[in-house]
Image (cartoon, rainbow, N blue to C red; front, side):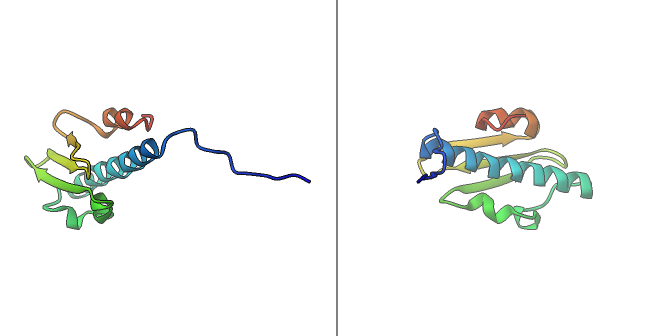
Length: 104
């Protein structure tokens, strides 16, 4: 008889968690950018951006800071004290994706 098991992911749990967090973070950046494109302005807070509540999941604190009519900074403070920062004045979501090994 044959026993079939699911293939094991060779990445560590930490790597999987970091990549999942990166995907959520990148999706949040893209949602803010989409809001800007659709409304001609940045959101005043993350509360008006669909999916924003997931940015603060898993013990992560996300701070959104609009800097002008079209640039902003998104900062994540991770449970381990690490910080991830995206500055739309100098980065794009496409340039930011490789930091999380997401392609792009």
